[in-house]
Length: 256
Image (cartoon, rainbow, N blue to C red; front, side, top):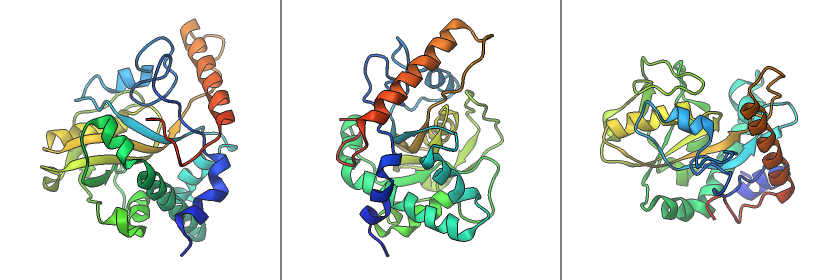
């Protein structure tokens, strides 16, 4: 089997490094936040749940066809070609393993405590068989040894910026675990926050969240949009351009 480096090095130019938290950058998810400590989506998605403060994106991504990482994160689940899905699952496994191999200490230092368990944010609609992210994690002996399926879909409806305290239900095995909660993509954080709330309610300590692709919405809001929305989109575009030029390296992360 190829090494993690052989699987990820050809794609390094498609990853976009998230910026460190600071003025104008969300302290929770590393999106552009304007003049506020947290971005709009993090403020909204934390309202109805016990909030998760630390979410670590491996890379920024967009949703258009030119965003190659987003295509991988979509097609490893939805491609009609099993060979494509399998190849992308390997890529995802290597990306996650390589990042955690370099930056677990960074996450634990930022959180002020360690984690002993990996859990994923499952599909809200339910899914027959293993989630593709679970399949990717189980490819790695190191990651699979830490992984437990700790969440099931709950009855609550999770909206674009609206988390739900009952959106997921923790399994009994969650109690007493120190968890790094992993998702493949994050757009507003509502699913991540809902999942973290369920684990916390179920007796787990959610140390941090990690997303492979933090989606940055750069869509033109249109002429009818409020001025502050247009200004925020412009700030995101500037952040995207700046980070795209910075170049991605596995030697650094957004917590450093």
